[in-house]
Structure formats: C-alpha cells, structure tokens
Image (tube, rainbow, N blue to C red; front, side, top):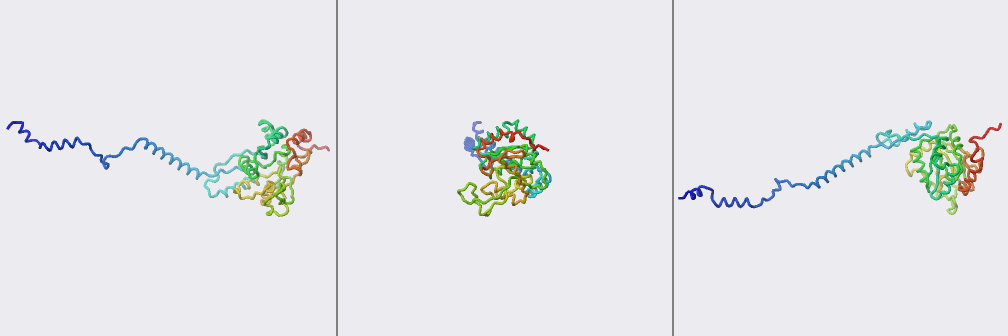
Length: 335
C-alpha cells in the first residue's frame, strides 16, 4: 500500500475533520449569561451627574430644615430680655433658637414716611423743604437727630404695616414713627420728643381722638366693620403721624400673619391693637398743629384734611416762613 494511503488511514476520519472545520466557520451566538452587555458612556455620565445632583439636593434640604430662624437683636432699655424671651418661646420647638443674631443699627427713632404711587409732587415738595434732597443731606440729618428716615410707597395700610415689620427687623430703634407725606415736619423737635424720659416701656404717642363710627358706605371714612366697634370709636391717634415704642413694635412684629384684625381705616386698626395691648396713650398736640409755633413738631390742616390741604403748595408756603423752618429747636427763655 502506498505510504500516502497509510498515513491517511491512521489519521482522524475525513468526515469528522470536515464537520469540525465547518463549525469554526459559523459565527458564534452571544451568550447573555456569560458575556456582559457594555453600557454606552453617555448613559453612564448622565447617571453619575443625576446621582450627584440628587445627593446635593438632599444635603441642601436637610440643611434648610435644620437651619434655625435668625433671632433679631433687640436692646432698648428693659425690652431686650422681654423680646428675646417672647421670641424664643415662639421658636422653642426649633433647634438652635439663639443662632444667627442679626446686627441692627441702633437709633433713637426710625421714621417711615408713607407715600403713594401718584404722589410724586408731594415727594418733590418734601425734598425742597424739610426733607433732604440728596443722600449726603439725609446722612447729615440722621447723624444730627439720631433718626433714620425711609420712604414707603404703598396703597394699602396692610402693606404699610408689613413695611414697618420689615424695618423693625433691620433697625433697632427706641421708637418707630409713622408719618404721611403730606405733613410739614420738624425732625429736630421730633428727636427731642423721643428723647424724653418715660416710665412706660409700652407707649403710643400721637394726637388722640374719639368720634362717631361712620357706617354710611357713601361717606369718606366708612368703616365696614363698624358693627364690631359700636357707635363711637375708642381713643386712638390721628393717622398722619403717630409713634410706637420699641417694645410695642416688638410684640406686633412677632404676631402671626392674619392674627390681628384689620379695620378699613389705618388709624383705627392701630388704635384697636393698642387698646388690646394695654399700652400707655400719650396725647401730644404738638404733632397736629394748624400753624407753625415755637413748639410745633408736625403741622397739617386738622381736621379739614387728613394732612395738609394741597400739600405740594402748602408745604412750600410753610417752609418759607421763618417760624416754620428757622426757629430754634427748643423755645427760647425770655425771662
């Protein structure tokens, strides 16, 4: 037998070799159990970014929940401990109640001047008479009197009170004054009034009045909640200017929103709160003079107008009078 045929017979069968070769030429089927699927890189990056954002949001939410409400600094006479105790009591359920104290400028008084969107002429008249026309002049006035002056443009007395609460949080004053933009004011004499020694820590100062409750909707000072008051108003100050001591404002500032009744007229609203708080009512007629005198603090046309009649004109007329603009802060002693 030829040698070639001998080697052929001693090798593996020809059919077996052919079958093995054909299997190698066929593509292999993927095995899901043994070969993992590769995730696209963009999906991996997006997942990591989403995870980081989720972790950051969780940390921020926890920090916001644990953060305590800042406790305002209040240090006017004996009012500091009273206010801190009241404020801490209302915040006793939150941790770290005394953290994050707000430092506020300390003043004799803060004067919030209420004006309206359509009162450009009044503000111009103020700046050309008793109120400084530039920032440097205002700074000199504030340094000379110990009073801070800020204007508030508002249409509703609810918003005006919100303004007062906000200013209380930023200014530490012994007294807070609300004044309208249609009165002629002597800031130097106002400072003298506020510097006066008083035995009552809760004081309400103004030109006090009483009068019949207006229940006719056609009349100017209509009070829609008049049935809750009766036939006559309780004692309260005229609205163009009044003053609240720091302890009174502190108590009002910590009251919950909508917990205090609002009447149609601002002066009545404030007066009702003062009646409920048992404050000392101080009647001072120098705050509602009809003309300038050696002791007048605020001049306006009471009771004809709630402020000066035609204030843009009258304010300039008054300022031109020496008695109004150039008379001494305190009356001279002629003896």
